[in-house]
Image 1 (tube, rainbow, N blue to C red):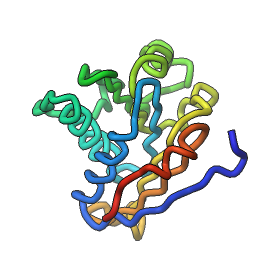
Image 2 (cartoon, helix red, strand yellow):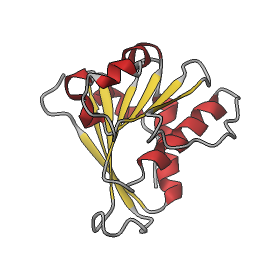
Image 3 (cartoon, rainbow, N blue to C red):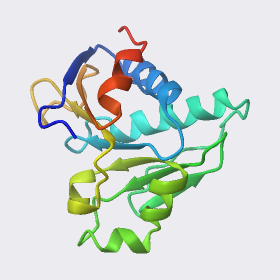
Amino acid sequence: MSPNPKVIEFHLSSPDATDSLAQALARLCRQGDVIGLCGELGAGKTTFARAFIHARGAMAGIPCDEEVPSPTFTLVQIYDIGEAPVWHFDLYRLEKSADAVELGIDEAFATAISLVEWPERLDNLLPPDRLEVKLAIPGGEEHPQQAARTAHLTGFGSWQGRLKDLDFHD
């Protein structure tokens, strides 16, 4: 892993732009990929995950019309769409990183595409080969109603090279 991973920044002018970024990243993903979704409450992590899951379904010709809820209380939702299932974790309520093993996170990291909200709660369980997407609200948490967001993408491992293939423009 490179000690200085490259960070790419995007200004997302609307919720549609956040959806478009999620869709562009969904096209780059493959089995075993882990995407950490970082940001304060209300920054758009679940919105991003929802658009990503719908895009993966569309890519597989499986329209994902179902509601894609935040897994805040269930901690994980699994979507069997396409060549690799998508596991959507929300670790906000996780008390210790070892609890993630009970959720099947090892299986998800090996066999699926994993979207992990609050990945910092995994400590040393985070794989070295991953993408981190940090969403921020300009002006901070006190203005969550603003549509604009900033996204910082940090690629670790293979993601450093793969990000050059990202086809996204707001």
